[in-house]
Amino acid sequence: MSDPTIQTFCCHHTENKEDLAIKIMSEFNTESYNSVCLVSSTIGILGSIYQIFPRPLRKNQTRPLNCSSVRGRRIIIWLAIADLLAALGVLVRSSLWLQYKNIMPMPNDDAWTQYFYTATWFWTLFYAIDTWRSIRGYDSQSALYHSLAWGLPAATTSIGLSILYLPNAKCHHITSVSSALLKILPNYCATYLPIAIVMVANPIIYIMASRKIEMTVALPLAQFTSKERHVVDTLRLKFFLINAVFYICWLPNLINGILVWTMWFNMPVTFIIVIWYIMALLNPMQALLNALVYRKWNTNERRSKPSVPSFQKFFQSNDEQSPLLGSEPPRLPLSPIPAINNYATL
Image (tube, helix red, strand yellow):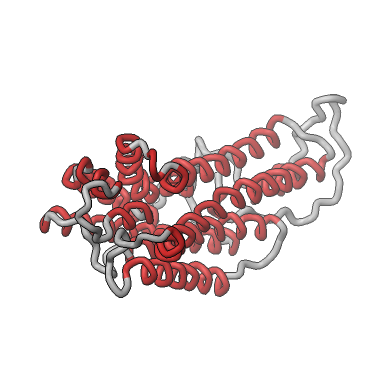
C-alpha cells in the first residue's frame, strides 16, 4: 500500500517513549502487516496481468475493431500496467522488510510504490474524462494523458518524499509545529489530493455521461422502452461499480489521514492500526477489482447485453411498437450515435 501516514510513522525518531510514534509502532506487528501486503500484492499482480493480456476469443465471437474500443482498451492497459508495477513494488518492499526485520525506510524505499499508485489515480481520472469525450464525439488526447499521468506523479512523489526524507529520515525530532507541517504536510497533499480529486470528479463525470447516453438513446424514437432502459441501467451499473472500487480501495486512506491530523494527541491507536491493515489489504487489491469492473462484460455471445454501438441497428428495426399507442412510431432521422469505448462495452 502507499500512504503517507505509514511513511511518517516509519521515519527515524527519538527514543522518547512518550512519543506517539513510539507507542504506535510498539503495538504494530510488522511481520503480520507485511504478510498481508505480500498476499494482497500477489493477488493484485495476478489481476493486473489478467487485465493486460487479452483473453482468447470463443467460437462465433468477433473482436470489435472500431477506434473507440481501441482507445478505451489502451487506457485500460496503461491503468493495469501502473497497477502491476505498484503491486510489484509492495511485494518487493514487504519481502525485504520481512527478511531484514526492519520497517525503517531508506529515502527511496517508497518512491516506486507511491509513484505508480499515483499514476493509477490519474489514469482512473483520465478514463472517466475520455468516456465523456467519446460520448460527445471528441477525439482522445492520448499524448496529453500520458504526459500528465506519468509526469504529475513524478513531480508530486519526488517533492513529497524528498522533503520528508532528505537529508535524512528524521521527522520526529522536530519540536515546532510549523517545522513539522513543512516537513510532513507536502507528502500528505501529494498523496491525498489526487485521491480526493478522483473521488469528487469521477462520479460527476459518470453522472453527466449517463444522462447524455439516456438522451442519445431516447431522442431518435422519442420514446424510452424497456430495451433502452435496460441498456442505460447497465451502463449506469458499470459506472457505479467503477466508482465503488476506487472508493473501497482508497477511502480508508483518507479516513486514516483525517484521524491522524485531527486527533493526533488523542488518537485511537488500535483503530489506526486496524485501518493500516485494511489499507494493506485493499490498496494492492485495486488491480484485481479493476480487472473485474473494467473488463469487457459480454464474454458470451448468447448472454451478452447490447453494446452502445448496436443502438443504430436496434433503433432502425421495424418490429418495435410504441408501448403507449400500440402502433409503429414515425422514424426520425438518426444521427451517428457515439460509441462509448470498449471500456463501457456491455
